[in-house]
Image (cartoon, rainbow, N blue to C red):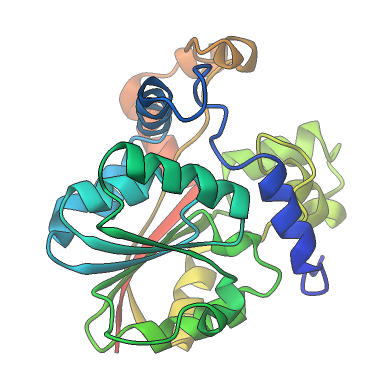
Length: 278
């Protein structure tokens, strides 16, 4: 299934209705307790993110984050000493991220931009090149990812680091969606994966990539691919998880931890790649 003709407004509306991770805490949205719990839950469930982002590495550097959501990674880049430009399509997500930056006294280190990854120049004129361009779990949700990757060259220079996470086509999650929601109808795989890729069903666009496909995509746009790895199998029982309790699904509990980690590195939902602009 191709998503190129999906209206961008459909994508915007989807994320405005429920910004990513907005329900990671039952506390009142906007409170210190709320944001602390959102961050703790995110990095507990997805512990590979800090190692991939390498927040301390970017102290004193310029970081462009494409798709900041409600700003968990954004805050950590800024706390580590980076100057961050954070772009997101969703005005609702940005409103929460701005509130968060002000609350923690980081708003002087972050510039928020309401913009479209496929046409960054419309809201973010190219200027001094960035040292890092970072996008975690975002570019697979835009109707034309090739256009978004084309934009990156305008904001970096030879040597700029690019770190991207997109969804892994050959993952446990895709297999689970295909069997449980798609009833094995592999010819409808892209449609079914898109519909069930997020906590809130009905996501209008979700692409997925193989390791080779993702590396080829970066290389095609002037970025030499480096380390690429898969990670993250959601192993928690949903009923307990919705109550902010953590109990592994029974068949994952049977696996020794090293075996489960090896499975994640093979069939994880998150395909993470680091590259360098040529």
